[in-house]
Image (cartoon, rainbow, N blue to C red):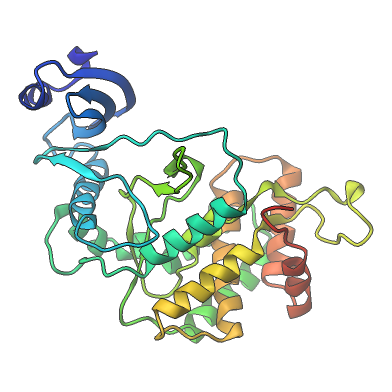
Amino acid sequence: MKDRLPGYLRKKLYLLDPDFEVLKIVKNRYPRIAFQIRIKDGVFLVKALQGRIPWIRASRHFRFHKERFIYKQLGGVEFHFFRHPSLYHVGNSYFITEFIPSDTGIKKDLAYYESAIIGIAEFNTSDFPYERHGCIGWVWEKLNRLKFAKSAKTLRTLCTGFFVKRKLPGRVFLKSLAFWKQSMAKTRRLKSPIIVHRDIFHGNILRPPNKKVVFIDFEKMGLEKRWFFIDALRLTQAEPLFFKEASDADENNETYGFPRFYATVLVKYWKFILERRPDIDGGDDHFRRQLRFSLLDWTLHKLVKEKHGREVNAMLVTFIDSVILGRHEEFEQWFRNLPHPDA
């Protein structure tokens, strides 16, 4: 498989170990390539650029340089709970990190979720040096704040769902728009931003045999000054994701197929955030507003960006209308019915 690598990269790897072996091509989407190698020091993961022309697939070029920059800086940040692959070697158009095998057979139990949520909370509130260094990918992130910021992205998805995809009824669209405006007015911007991963899902959370959770893939990492439940909400998605349908539900279950999250883990995340960031409003209203806004963004993404049948789309619209934007009692009833990781 060596012949599938860029010529410059083969030369660089040869200098590290003339007998290097390519074990597996993990991803090959121009202009980026990722693969596992075995060299004298062990097994590693290599990420590299195949093309040097930045205006071809420019966003992928910028994300590569941002992730390369992030890995270089993470080594200088002290973490107690957050774990990430260590950087082994870096060049202008490639970087090499340790390869961490994940035990896919281990059950996602309470220990998994607590380890992951405390780790991501520490990462979110870390002293990452985002202002002290220059990087073309990081500059690109700052110049595209209107694209990447959660408030702008939620509004964009909302408008797309109504004007383009026609998946939102007019009444729910107007109700969602009013909620967006109200939330923006009531939630103040933080002077010091929260660092967010933005790409939390099962493939980017590894659990090696030692059972210590490790996070990978930082190309979408960015800054948020209002809505910081982004990572926590994705991490705490319950399995299975949806409650039973109403016909199969118990008499007391009035959630009717709505999405499920692990509420106790979300609360643990909130408490840990407040311990590390006393400048954040710790009131219950703020907690609920953070959660509702992130739920609106999450549900709109499911509805607008993903393909589902009519029944699932109708359920998502109902969830927005009756729970996220509904009365306080409706939201609290849904929240009380959320499961525990060991349930």
